[in-house]
Amino acid sequence: MLTTLPIKRQLLKQRQVKLSIKLSSLILVTSLFSGCVTLAEFTDGGDSFTMSAAASEEMNAINAAMNAVEILYQRGNKQDLAYYAPNNFELALKKREALLSMYEDYTPNGGSWFSNSGSEEIETESELFVQRMNKAFQAKLITEPLLSMIRDHDEFIQSIDVDGFEARFEKLRDSTTQFAGLIESRGTGLGLEHQKIKLERDYNSLEVDMIKRKVLRLPTSEFNLLDQELVPESYNKALNGLYSLERLIEKNPRDNTVIQQQLNASYRQIKQAASIAKEVVWVKSRIETSAERVVINYRDHLSSLNSYLGTEELTALDFQSQVRGIKDAVALKISQHDKEKELNDQHLRRQLAELGRLLTGQDMSKYSISQQVDNLIFAARSLVDESIDIPLAQR
Image (cartoon, rainbow, N blue to C red; front, side):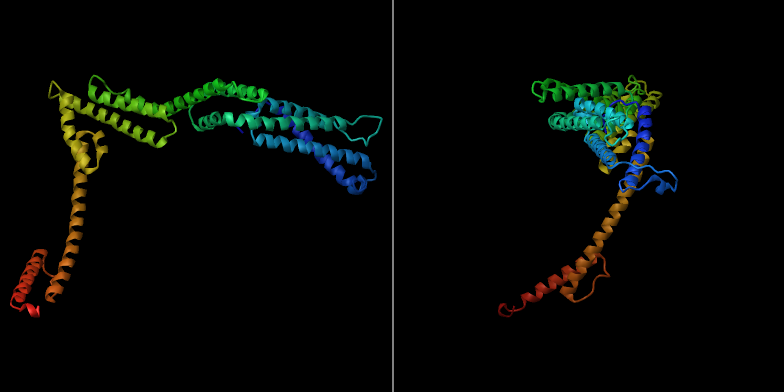
């Protein structure tokens, strides 16, 4: 349950212990005396104690009323009435607390005129509790549609593991409770549209800020290590990548797939800038001017190779590492090409051999492709020459 009202936990725990003992005692008494069984018979003792039928009936009625109260209370908790109907549910909780106190002090007396057991008060208060809970359920029917988007933000925000936003979140939740209570008391959301829009906007802003901190914290810290003076062009490229990532989050903070893709691209740009910086330092020790441009130029040549080979991730590595990676990729390409060529050759040889068998009746699969082609050409020409000498009527 997302929203709970403050409760004195220790007092409630003590009361629950007392009530459980009391309920157990009442159940035991009911089982003993509803059938006129004496306590002495149950305990083998000498003394006996019996409860009148009127007292037993009264006690059963009170227990049934309290049981109905607890069932309705649990149903309200399950349907989160503290969130959707805070005013009525809070009043119902106070009524329940009073009932628990009354029940704790309750002792059935069988309707004796010497003392008042409190049964009438309990039954009256339990009816009032039921009425208040019904009002809370009715209020939820009005508030739930108006709070659906806010509740969606609420649940999503609670799923994000980011520290530092607790006070801001609690303030929004308090505002939501006040907003729900206002709808509840009016019985309508008419005239409250501006408050609803503001709450939804504030929740969305909080959601965006939390995702920004969660996603941008690490790449930004790595970006801040870059030396802008050393690699201005690469620095700006990485900075623009972070800006793009930030705009994506602002547009849709829950589109994790697109955000993750841009995050990976930003990391690659930052690492690329860092590796370029190392190479610029190396080049500057040998070339006094335009060191970064020299590094970028030869990297551009490597990038075209990486694009062809499908190894774009290598662009974030230094020159030596890229060369090694490209070498391995080229070797793999050649190996794959050789395998494909071998398979294609085998297929072609089988096709040529089958054609040769049809034309000559001979098995030519042992010959090379070029030899098989020559033999097929010779066989085809022979068939044509033979057909020339055959009269048209016999062809």
